Image (cartoon, rainbow over all chains, first blue to last red; front, side, top):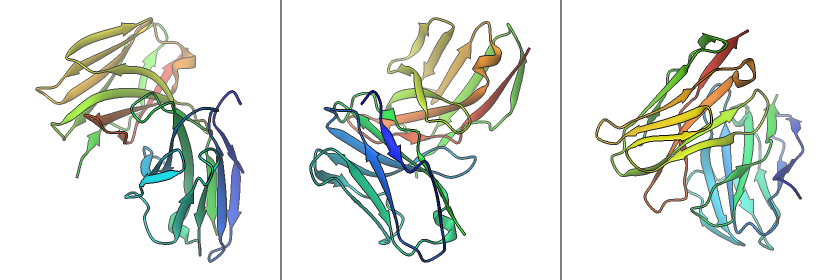
Length: 113
Length: 111
């Protein structure tokens, strides 16, 4: 596709529900990143994939957060037992290589009620 | 804890004026510096990157970097109402893939 595609754009979850957020990176992009952006804040790093390998998950806030990229293309960020503090925009970005310019998707706005 | 600091604004300037956006960072090993523009409800979009001390110009945008003072700025000349957005400063350590963002400065260009 022309850009990084994320779905759904908006998700409302009841507290305790599990959610899955999808990211379709730009075709051929080896590197994929997930960031979390709270209201009025800048994005914060969650995790990084190089192809299918998750090389860094140091930013995941708890063990309720899990990300995968099994075939080195589409990635899914899963949040189990959602809490109110998980409400944020989740941004996916991809780049040709780790140090190359990263292009961001439109994000998924998650609201936990 | 690495920090990137920005004034949250809003910075309000009249159309045609120069908008000056500032950013300081705490980590002396930071080597790459970026300015992203983010319209409300949209994704961050890279508008400038700068790696060495001095100025870098691209159209109406000029990025300025002073590593000794740990300071990076973005100047927007001939500001237009369409420049109204939040501007995010981001830094990377040498050979790192992680972007560390400031909280952004909201810019308002008044017609």
